[in-house]
Image 1: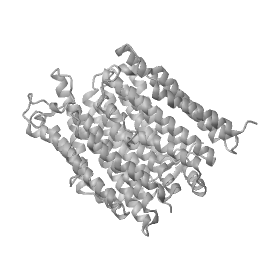
Image 2: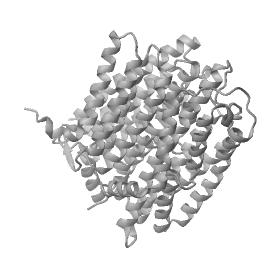
Image 3: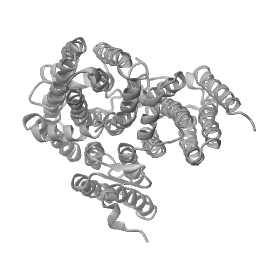
Image 4: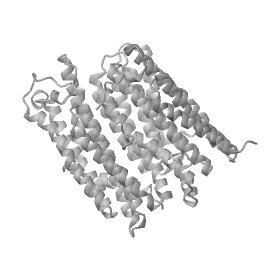
Length: 490
Length: 100
């Protein structure tokens, strides 16, 4: 006898899975697919409510799925991103034949990410990871243009190679410890760490680093973000990439505990190279989506500082507090970056819509943004806010995340890393301001357009979110601190 | 009984071959085969390690990963077929418009 009430904290996942199946099935019979978007919208809003009100602190399915503040934080982020993408795609996939498949894949990708953020066992982690990856491979090719397919192919090859690396690492971890529970692996590895466990951990970290787009595993990201449909790029940069972080927070912290202090320096160098390379390369780009892709690589470098802080905090007298603020800063930056990047990619979708209607071909070139403030004022204003937020200017979500994270790095004695990160934020201002200059100071090259309602709704909601977190950060900081406490040894 | 070291040797050889192929080959189908090699080398590990363990977690994991590899191949070949329809080739050297 299954006691359904027992599984109440997992209703959100169940709802979204059932909805995805229902949409696929109903799509076989229904002529008009315009309903599907609204159904997904309602489903996602409902599951956001379920996630935020779920009772935390319980473990399900033979100790493999845990519902705790950390998982709920990530789940809320993923659902918000999908919600915004669905609102925007109400304008995009209105009458197209495959609308039902688009929404079903999007919902399944969201479920996959949610499973990853909840899993405390390698098997569930891998299954969730693959569910999200497979759905996004198909989404990246969705419009079936030449660019889409090339982007999807590159994403597929890199993505499946990285899951294979990860799986190989998992198999070695299992061989060494005899268990697939992450917490038991941590205890066994801490007791005896040999060279073989090191190799296993390196495989696992490499697998995650592909998804997080850390240098040197970032090569696929710019190509994929540029070539995939704009709305799917939003999902990839804001959702799928954050899933890599969700998995890394669960597993790499285990590694940091096992590896102890000596190895945090390797992560520090990785983070430093990632943010610097991302920002420097972004300066030379003329394609706006590539600029966003490299800025996203740079942001991954900032977020990776959280791993370093946890490693470096090990010897300090107030190590628990420093580590907690480090993780909380990482989480806040993840939430902020998810919102900002979703918004930024939806704005590129508006520009693409505008330019392609005029019969031009290269919609993402920066020249298309000339005079955008005259042609599409709402989009231009929202993009302006996102650019400032990405650069970390107060009062926005980007500023709060960076403030908490860099502050914890200084507390952990990593002053050089914090200084480097701040210098990098200054460099990034150059290419963000360049886009703003094109939008506001260059003369317009065409007439004013009517911005599609779905895009505008999504952009305005995202802008409100980005500013709301910046103006009223305390509840979000509290939530992130609570989530961070889950990862620390009690 | 075959010692577990031999299994690890086999799986490492398979893994290295897969990785080597992934770097050197440019044909879409060959790349898919290399990815299968990578995934299956991990499966060999899982099953071999599981033989010495009191629990069957490794074998369960291998079953899951076989199912996922099949799904992955499905998506991969779907993308390859669409590529072939547009480009008339699956040689990835000819499909390279996106670059910095």
